[in-house]
Image (cartoon, rainbow, N blue to C red):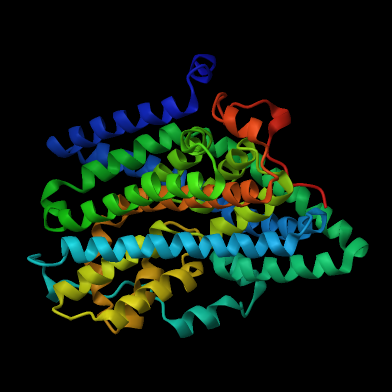
Length: 430
Protein backbone atom coordinates (compact mmCIF):
# COMPACT_ATOMS: atom_id res chain seq x y z
CA UNK A 1 0.00 0.00 0.00
CA UNK A 2 2.77 2.39 0.99
CA UNK A 3 4.78 1.59 -2.14
CA UNK A 4 1.69 2.14 -4.28
CA UNK A 5 1.11 5.54 -2.70
CA UNK A 6 4.74 6.54 -3.32
CA UNK A 7 4.16 6.01 -7.03
CA UNK A 8 1.45 8.69 -6.97
CA UNK A 9 2.95 12.21 -7.29
CA UNK A 10 2.81 14.13 -4.03
CA UNK A 11 0.74 16.94 -5.54
CA UNK A 12 -1.83 14.37 -6.72
CA UNK A 13 -1.93 12.86 -3.22
CA UNK A 14 -2.76 16.28 -1.77
CA UNK A 15 -5.43 16.83 -4.44
CA UNK A 16 -7.00 13.47 -3.58
CA UNK A 17 -6.97 14.41 0.10
CA UNK A 18 -8.62 17.71 -0.79
CA UNK A 19 -11.40 16.06 -2.80
CA UNK A 20 -12.05 13.38 -0.19
CA UNK A 21 -12.00 15.99 2.58
CA UNK A 22 -14.63 18.10 0.80
CA UNK A 23 -16.81 15.03 0.29
CA UNK A 24 -16.55 13.97 3.93
CA UNK A 25 -17.15 17.54 5.08
CA UNK A 26 -20.36 17.80 3.08
CA UNK A 27 -21.42 14.37 4.35
CA UNK A 28 -20.81 15.42 7.98
CA UNK A 29 -22.69 18.71 7.56
CA UNK A 30 -25.62 17.31 5.58
CA UNK A 31 -26.23 14.48 8.03
CA UNK A 32 -25.19 16.33 11.21
CA UNK A 33 -22.48 13.76 11.96
CA UNK A 34 -20.75 15.35 14.93
CA UNK A 35 -18.37 12.40 15.34
CA UNK A 36 -17.11 12.79 11.77
CA UNK A 37 -16.63 16.55 12.17
CA UNK A 38 -14.71 15.94 15.40
CA UNK A 39 -12.55 13.29 13.71
CA UNK A 40 -11.74 15.60 10.79
CA UNK A 41 -10.93 18.42 13.20
CA UNK A 42 -8.64 16.16 15.23
CA UNK A 43 -6.77 14.87 12.15
CA UNK A 44 -6.27 18.36 10.73
CA UNK A 45 -5.38 19.83 14.11
CA UNK A 46 -2.72 17.19 14.79
CA UNK A 47 -1.11 17.86 11.42
CA UNK A 48 -0.89 21.62 12.08
CA UNK A 49 0.35 20.97 15.62
CA UNK A 50 3.16 18.78 14.28
CA UNK A 51 4.17 21.57 11.90
CA UNK A 52 4.10 24.14 14.71
CA UNK A 53 6.23 21.87 16.90
CA UNK A 54 9.16 22.30 14.52
CA UNK A 55 8.78 26.07 14.13
CA UNK A 56 10.99 27.43 17.00
CA UNK A 57 14.11 25.28 16.35
CA UNK A 58 13.63 25.49 12.59
CA UNK A 59 13.41 29.30 12.49
CA UNK A 60 16.30 29.86 14.90
CA UNK A 61 18.78 27.44 13.34
CA UNK A 62 17.81 28.29 9.75
CA UNK A 63 18.35 32.03 10.26
CA UNK A 64 21.59 31.61 12.25
CA UNK A 65 23.01 29.34 9.54
CA UNK A 66 21.72 31.55 6.72
CA UNK A 67 23.29 34.70 8.22
CA UNK A 68 26.64 32.94 8.71
CA UNK A 69 26.39 31.52 5.20
CA UNK A 70 26.49 35.07 3.81
CA UNK A 71 30.24 34.84 4.46
CA UNK A 72 30.54 32.69 1.36
CA UNK A 73 28.25 34.77 -0.84
CA UNK A 74 29.79 37.32 -3.15
CA UNK A 75 28.28 40.79 -2.71
CA UNK A 76 26.18 39.53 0.24
CA UNK A 77 25.18 43.02 1.37
CA UNK A 78 23.94 43.93 -2.10
CA UNK A 79 21.97 40.69 -2.38
CA UNK A 80 20.34 41.27 1.01
CA UNK A 81 19.46 44.84 0.05
CA UNK A 82 17.98 43.77 -3.29
CA UNK A 83 15.98 41.03 -1.57
CA UNK A 84 14.49 43.57 0.83
CA UNK A 85 13.82 45.96 -2.05
CA UNK A 86 11.85 43.36 -4.00
CA UNK A 87 10.01 42.33 -0.85
CA UNK A 88 8.90 45.96 -0.53
CA UNK A 89 8.04 46.42 -4.22
CA UNK A 90 5.82 43.33 -4.42
CA UNK A 91 4.21 44.15 -1.06
CA UNK A 92 3.38 47.66 -2.28
CA UNK A 93 1.81 46.30 -5.47
CA UNK A 94 -0.17 43.75 -3.45
CA UNK A 95 -1.57 46.29 -1.00
CA UNK A 96 -2.50 48.57 -3.90
CA UNK A 97 -4.49 45.71 -5.42
CA UNK A 98 -6.14 45.06 -2.05
CA UNK A 99 -7.16 48.71 -1.69
CA UNK A 100 -8.33 48.87 -5.30
CA UNK A 101 -10.51 45.78 -4.90
CA UNK A 102 -11.90 47.14 -1.65
CA UNK A 103 -12.93 50.41 -3.30
CA UNK A 104 -14.35 48.54 -6.28
CA UNK A 105 -16.35 45.90 -4.42
CA UNK A 106 -17.28 47.74 -1.18
CA UNK A 107 -17.20 44.44 0.77
CA UNK A 108 -18.74 45.92 3.94
CA UNK A 109 -21.67 47.78 2.41
CA UNK A 110 -25.03 46.15 2.95
CA UNK A 111 -23.57 43.57 5.34
CA UNK A 112 -25.85 42.80 8.27
CA UNK A 113 -23.98 41.39 11.23
CA UNK A 114 -24.51 41.36 14.98
CA UNK A 115 -22.16 44.19 15.96
CA UNK A 116 -23.16 43.89 19.61
CA UNK A 117 -21.54 40.47 19.71
CA UNK A 118 -18.35 41.59 18.01
CA UNK A 119 -15.39 41.57 20.39
CA UNK A 120 -11.74 42.30 19.87
CA UNK A 121 -9.60 39.17 19.43
CA UNK A 122 -7.46 38.00 22.34
CA UNK A 123 -4.30 38.61 20.31
CA UNK A 124 -4.00 42.13 18.98
CA UNK A 125 -1.22 44.37 17.79
CA UNK A 126 -0.18 47.97 18.05
CA UNK A 127 3.04 49.69 17.03
CA UNK A 128 4.10 49.85 20.69
CA UNK A 129 3.38 46.16 21.22
CA UNK A 130 5.11 45.31 17.95
CA UNK A 131 8.29 47.25 18.74
CA UNK A 132 8.55 46.21 22.40
CA UNK A 133 7.59 42.64 21.54
CA UNK A 134 10.59 42.17 19.24
CA UNK A 135 13.06 41.93 22.12
CA UNK A 136 12.33 39.02 24.50
CA UNK A 137 12.59 39.49 28.23
CA UNK A 138 13.55 35.84 28.52
CA UNK A 139 15.23 33.99 25.60
CA UNK A 140 13.89 30.64 26.82
CA UNK A 141 10.39 32.10 27.08
CA UNK A 142 10.46 33.08 23.40
CA UNK A 143 10.93 29.40 22.47
CA UNK A 144 8.45 28.08 25.01
CA UNK A 145 5.75 30.52 23.89
CA UNK A 146 6.61 30.06 20.20
CA UNK A 147 7.04 33.82 19.67
CA UNK A 148 8.49 33.70 16.16
CA UNK A 149 9.22 37.43 15.94
CA UNK A 150 11.40 37.27 19.06
CA UNK A 151 13.08 34.09 17.84
CA UNK A 152 13.90 35.83 14.55
CA UNK A 153 15.42 38.75 16.46
CA UNK A 154 17.56 36.45 18.60
CA UNK A 155 18.69 34.44 15.57
CA UNK A 156 19.64 37.54 13.58
CA UNK A 157 21.69 38.98 16.46
CA UNK A 158 23.42 35.69 17.28
CA UNK A 159 23.99 34.87 13.61
CA UNK A 160 25.56 38.29 12.99
CA UNK A 161 27.78 37.88 16.07
CA UNK A 162 28.89 34.42 14.89
CA UNK A 163 29.62 35.84 11.42
CA UNK A 164 31.86 38.56 12.88
CA UNK A 165 33.63 36.23 15.34
CA UNK A 166 34.56 33.85 12.55
CA UNK A 167 36.57 30.72 13.30
CA UNK A 168 35.97 30.80 17.07
CA UNK A 169 32.21 30.48 16.52
CA UNK A 170 32.51 27.53 14.12
CA UNK A 171 31.61 24.84 16.72
CA UNK A 172 28.41 26.73 17.54
CA UNK A 173 27.59 27.13 13.84
CA UNK A 174 28.26 23.43 13.23
CA UNK A 175 25.87 22.56 16.06
CA UNK A 176 23.18 24.74 14.49
CA UNK A 177 23.72 23.08 11.10
CA UNK A 178 23.30 19.67 12.71
CA UNK A 179 20.14 20.67 14.59
CA UNK A 180 18.74 22.25 11.43
CA UNK A 181 19.37 19.07 9.43
CA UNK A 182 17.69 16.95 12.13
CA UNK A 183 14.64 19.23 12.38
CA UNK A 184 14.30 19.33 8.61
CA UNK A 185 14.46 15.53 8.39
CA UNK A 186 11.74 15.18 11.02
CA UNK A 187 9.68 17.87 9.30
CA UNK A 188 9.85 15.99 6.00
CA UNK A 189 8.19 13.05 7.75
CA UNK A 190 5.40 15.40 8.82
CA UNK A 191 5.15 16.87 5.33
CA UNK A 192 4.59 13.38 3.92
CA UNK A 193 1.44 13.30 6.03
CA UNK A 194 0.12 16.39 4.23
CA UNK A 195 -2.48 14.45 2.15
CA UNK A 196 -4.04 13.13 5.39
CA UNK A 197 -3.74 16.55 7.02
CA UNK A 198 -5.40 18.08 3.97
CA UNK A 199 -8.31 15.69 4.29
CA UNK A 200 -8.86 16.69 7.93
CA UNK A 201 -8.34 20.44 7.49
CA UNK A 202 -10.54 20.84 4.42
CA UNK A 203 -13.14 18.38 5.68
CA UNK A 204 -13.49 20.22 8.99
CA UNK A 205 -13.68 23.58 7.21
CA UNK A 206 -16.51 22.38 4.95
CA UNK A 207 -18.35 20.74 7.88
CA UNK A 208 -17.96 23.80 10.13
CA UNK A 209 -18.45 26.71 7.72
CA UNK A 210 -21.67 26.27 5.81
CA UNK A 211 -23.17 28.80 3.42
CA UNK A 212 -25.35 30.19 6.22
CA UNK A 213 -22.19 31.47 7.92
CA UNK A 214 -20.35 32.46 4.76
CA UNK A 215 -23.28 34.20 3.02
CA UNK A 216 -23.02 37.56 4.87
CA UNK A 217 -19.28 37.62 4.20
CA UNK A 218 -19.37 36.14 0.70
CA UNK A 219 -18.40 39.39 -1.01
CA UNK A 220 -15.45 39.91 1.34
CA UNK A 221 -14.30 36.28 1.03
CA UNK A 222 -14.50 36.48 -2.77
CA UNK A 223 -12.56 39.76 -2.80
CA UNK A 224 -9.74 38.21 -0.73
CA UNK A 225 -9.50 35.19 -3.03
CA UNK A 226 -9.67 37.32 -6.18
CA UNK A 227 -7.03 39.72 -4.83
CA UNK A 228 -4.67 36.87 -3.98
CA UNK A 229 -5.31 35.25 -7.36
CA UNK A 230 -4.48 38.51 -9.18
CA UNK A 231 -1.18 38.79 -7.31
CA UNK A 232 -0.42 35.10 -7.71
CA UNK A 233 -1.31 34.64 -11.37
CA UNK A 234 -0.97 38.14 -12.85
CA UNK A 235 1.48 40.25 -10.83
CA UNK A 236 4.03 37.53 -10.13
CA UNK A 237 4.16 36.31 -13.75
CA UNK A 238 4.59 39.92 -14.93
CA UNK A 239 7.46 40.38 -12.47
CA UNK A 240 9.07 37.15 -13.68
CA UNK A 241 8.80 38.19 -17.33
CA UNK A 242 9.76 41.86 -17.02
CA UNK A 243 12.30 41.78 -14.18
CA UNK A 244 13.79 38.32 -14.56
CA UNK A 245 13.15 37.43 -18.23
CA UNK A 246 11.80 34.13 -16.97
CA UNK A 247 9.02 31.79 -18.10
CA UNK A 248 6.23 31.94 -15.44
CA UNK A 249 5.01 28.43 -16.32
CA UNK A 250 8.40 27.00 -15.34
CA UNK A 251 8.33 28.95 -12.08
CA UNK A 252 4.94 27.57 -11.06
CA UNK A 253 5.99 24.05 -12.09
CA UNK A 254 8.91 24.28 -9.69
CA UNK A 255 7.23 26.19 -6.86
CA UNK A 256 3.82 24.50 -6.96
CA UNK A 257 4.53 21.83 -4.27
CA UNK A 258 5.35 24.61 -1.79
CA UNK A 259 2.32 26.70 -2.82
CA UNK A 260 0.06 23.67 -2.54
CA UNK A 261 1.36 22.69 0.90
CA UNK A 262 1.03 26.30 2.09
CA UNK A 263 -2.63 26.31 1.02
CA UNK A 264 -3.52 23.32 3.17
CA UNK A 265 -1.14 23.87 6.11
CA UNK A 266 -1.68 27.64 6.43
CA UNK A 267 1.90 28.02 7.70
CA UNK A 268 4.69 29.77 5.81
CA UNK A 269 7.30 28.60 8.30
CA UNK A 270 6.01 25.02 8.26
CA UNK A 271 6.29 25.06 4.47
CA UNK A 272 9.80 26.59 4.53
CA UNK A 273 11.80 23.38 3.82
CA UNK A 274 9.65 22.68 0.75
CA UNK A 275 9.95 26.32 -0.34
CA UNK A 276 13.72 26.26 -0.06
CA UNK A 277 14.00 23.00 -1.96
CA UNK A 278 11.69 24.43 -4.64
CA UNK A 279 13.80 27.59 -4.94
CA UNK A 280 17.00 25.58 -5.24
CA UNK A 281 15.37 23.35 -7.86
CA UNK A 282 14.54 26.54 -9.77
CA UNK A 283 18.26 27.22 -10.04
CA UNK A 284 18.82 29.71 -7.21
CA UNK A 285 22.29 29.20 -5.65
CA UNK A 286 22.00 27.33 -2.35
CA UNK A 287 24.13 29.88 -0.48
CA UNK A 288 21.70 32.66 -1.36
CA UNK A 289 18.54 30.53 -1.03
CA UNK A 290 19.53 29.50 2.50
CA UNK A 291 19.40 33.18 3.48
CA UNK A 292 16.50 34.49 1.39
CA UNK A 293 13.94 31.74 2.03
CA UNK A 294 14.10 31.63 5.86
CA UNK A 295 14.14 35.43 5.93
CA UNK A 296 11.16 35.60 3.57
CA UNK A 297 9.21 32.94 5.49
CA UNK A 298 9.13 35.26 8.50
CA UNK A 299 8.75 38.66 6.82
CA UNK A 300 7.39 38.29 3.25
CA UNK A 301 3.59 38.14 3.51
CA UNK A 302 1.80 39.56 0.45
CA UNK A 303 -1.38 37.66 1.29
CA UNK A 304 -1.57 38.06 5.08
CA UNK A 305 0.11 41.45 5.42
CA UNK A 306 -0.90 43.31 2.26
CA UNK A 307 -4.04 42.15 0.45
CA UNK A 308 -5.96 40.91 3.47
CA UNK A 309 -5.49 43.82 5.92
CA UNK A 310 -6.24 46.34 3.15
CA UNK A 311 -9.54 44.65 2.29
CA UNK A 312 -10.35 43.93 5.93
CA UNK A 313 -9.75 47.55 6.98
CA UNK A 314 -12.12 48.79 4.26
CA UNK A 315 -14.66 46.12 5.25
CA UNK A 316 -14.54 47.09 8.95
CA UNK A 317 -14.74 50.81 8.16
CA UNK A 318 -17.84 50.27 5.99
CA UNK A 319 -19.55 48.00 8.53
CA UNK A 320 -19.02 50.54 11.31
CA UNK A 321 -19.80 53.52 9.06
CA UNK A 322 -16.33 55.12 9.25
CA UNK A 323 -15.14 57.16 6.26
CA UNK A 324 -11.59 56.49 5.04
CA UNK A 325 -9.66 59.22 3.24
CA UNK A 326 -6.52 59.29 1.11
CA UNK A 327 -4.32 59.54 4.21
CA UNK A 328 -5.90 56.38 5.61
CA UNK A 329 -5.16 54.44 2.45
CA UNK A 330 -1.55 55.64 2.52
CA UNK A 331 -1.34 54.45 6.14
CA UNK A 332 -2.65 51.02 5.10
CA UNK A 333 0.12 50.82 2.48
CA UNK A 334 2.74 51.93 5.01
CA UNK A 335 1.67 49.37 7.61
CA UNK A 336 1.61 46.60 5.00
CA UNK A 337 5.13 47.28 3.74
CA UNK A 338 6.79 48.07 7.08
CA UNK A 339 4.81 46.01 9.57
CA UNK A 340 4.58 42.70 7.73
CA UNK A 341 7.09 41.10 10.11
CA UNK A 342 4.35 41.17 12.75
CA UNK A 343 2.75 38.14 11.06
CA UNK A 344 5.99 36.19 11.59
CA UNK A 345 5.03 33.25 9.38
CA UNK A 346 2.48 31.63 11.67
CA UNK A 347 -1.05 30.65 10.79
CA UNK A 348 -3.42 33.56 10.82
CA UNK A 349 -2.98 37.31 10.26
CA UNK A 350 -4.92 38.65 13.25
CA UNK A 351 -1.96 40.56 14.68
CA UNK A 352 -1.34 42.28 11.37
CA UNK A 353 -5.03 43.12 10.98
CA UNK A 354 -5.33 44.58 14.47
CA UNK A 355 -2.10 46.55 13.88
CA UNK A 356 -3.70 48.06 10.77
CA UNK A 357 -7.01 48.76 12.52
CA UNK A 358 -5.32 50.40 15.50
CA UNK A 359 -3.19 52.57 13.19
CA UNK A 360 -6.33 53.79 11.41
CA UNK A 361 -8.27 54.20 14.67
CA UNK A 362 -10.89 51.63 13.65
CA UNK A 363 -12.66 49.40 16.23
CA UNK A 364 -10.56 46.34 17.02
CA UNK A 365 -13.84 44.49 17.53
CA UNK A 366 -14.14 44.58 13.75
CA UNK A 367 -11.47 41.87 13.58
CA UNK A 368 -13.78 39.67 15.64
CA UNK A 369 -16.35 39.75 12.83
CA UNK A 370 -13.89 37.97 10.54
CA UNK A 371 -12.53 35.37 12.96
CA UNK A 372 -15.20 32.81 12.08
CA UNK A 373 -14.03 32.49 8.47
CA UNK A 374 -10.33 33.17 9.06
CA UNK A 375 -9.23 29.56 8.29
CA UNK A 376 -10.98 29.73 4.92
CA UNK A 377 -9.24 33.01 4.09
CA UNK A 378 -5.89 31.93 5.47
CA UNK A 379 -5.47 29.10 2.98
CA UNK A 380 -5.33 31.42 -0.02
CA UNK A 381 -3.41 34.10 1.88
CA UNK A 382 -0.64 31.68 2.87
CA UNK A 383 -0.38 30.21 -0.63
CA UNK A 384 0.19 33.75 -1.91
CA UNK A 385 2.75 34.41 0.83
CA UNK A 386 4.80 31.35 -0.07
CA UNK A 387 4.66 32.05 -3.80
CA UNK A 388 6.12 35.49 -3.10
CA UNK A 389 8.79 33.97 -0.86
CA UNK A 390 9.89 31.76 -3.77
CA UNK A 391 9.51 34.49 -6.39
CA UNK A 392 11.85 37.14 -4.94
CA UNK A 393 15.01 34.95 -4.61
CA UNK A 394 14.39 33.63 -8.12
CA UNK A 395 14.07 37.12 -9.62
CA UNK A 396 17.04 38.50 -7.70
CA UNK A 397 19.23 35.56 -8.74
CA UNK A 398 18.14 36.03 -12.38
CA UNK A 399 18.97 39.74 -12.30
CA UNK A 400 22.35 39.02 -10.67
CA UNK A 401 23.18 36.45 -13.34
CA UNK A 402 23.58 33.63 -10.81
CA UNK A 403 20.42 31.69 -11.66
CA UNK A 404 20.99 28.27 -13.24
CA UNK A 405 18.61 28.65 -16.16
CA UNK A 406 19.00 25.03 -17.21
CA UNK A 407 17.78 23.96 -13.78
CA UNK A 408 15.00 26.57 -13.98
CA UNK A 409 13.76 25.25 -17.32
CA UNK A 410 13.68 21.66 -16.01
CA UNK A 411 12.11 22.48 -12.62
CA UNK A 412 9.04 20.47 -11.72
CA UNK A 413 9.86 17.48 -13.90
CA UNK A 414 10.45 15.26 -10.84
CA UNK A 415 8.44 14.93 -7.69
CA UNK A 416 9.88 17.29 -5.08
CA UNK A 417 9.03 15.39 -1.91
CA UNK A 418 10.21 12.02 -3.18
CA UNK A 419 13.54 13.36 -4.44
CA UNK A 420 16.63 11.23 -3.78
CA UNK A 421 18.19 11.48 -0.35
CA UNK A 422 21.26 13.21 -1.77
CA UNK A 423 19.01 16.12 -2.73
CA UNK A 424 17.74 16.48 0.83
CA UNK A 425 17.68 20.12 1.82
CA UNK A 426 20.87 21.05 3.69
CA UNK A 427 22.26 24.41 4.67
CA UNK A 428 25.18 25.70 2.69
CA UNK A 429 28.57 25.54 4.31
CA UNK A 430 30.03 28.85 5.42
